[in-house]
View (cartoon, rainbow, N blue to C red):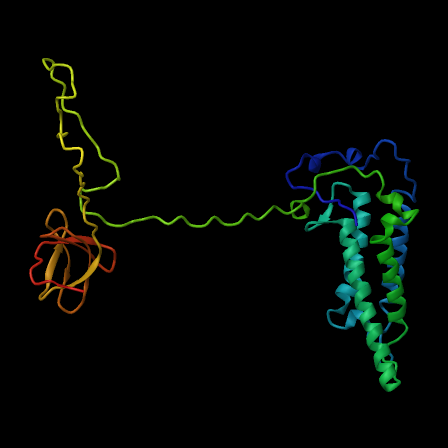
Length: 313
């Protein structure tokens, strides 16, 4: 199978037929019958015989061809017919249809003749199996002839690139970008693991960064140069053996609260947002001492100023 797949966005789509079909340098010229190669003419003759034979009955008990057997005709002879017509159209109109989906015309022909041969082989297999069991031949000579013809079609499409003189049809073809569906696949990268984020609540206005900060006071124009015996800003002299303890803000944890009666939860301006009562627990996300920060079921956050008698859960 050859690669005649073009990208929709490549400049080769608009190139002239002569440029696309011109042989590569150093390749002998190709002769055939008119505009068709020897392989294409042979494949067309095989298809013509198969097309005529398909109108004969495939059964012996009554007349029943593949054209009258439901959808059996689609794969057995319909798709091979389409493939041969596309091969002819490619020669007669180089700017016409040049692929079927992501398959080039030669690739499409290889696929359909392979499927057709497999289906005719299945019919032959079933006929022989029934004949061995019962001694009856249910199908006619048509299935044998069609199987042979489709196998010849497979040779002229799938195996032709390695069989002289049919291989000449595939030599010296111009190189073109492959269709995006026929290109090598991209590597799949492992999804990065999520990075945990610490979102512990802290008391408002108190943020511990693990570093002691010192802000020097405004310099005094009349002050002397700094000496070890002087202290400035917030530094204080301490003994060498004395340990300095830095008080860190206490961590705040959310908890459930139940109020003895219905109370309003308000916004920063004092306007009521929602109410909580003794029949349902409320989620307190921050305890500010005399004020609780409460989150409603819909995500609304407000302030509860009356925290007397609240039961913590």
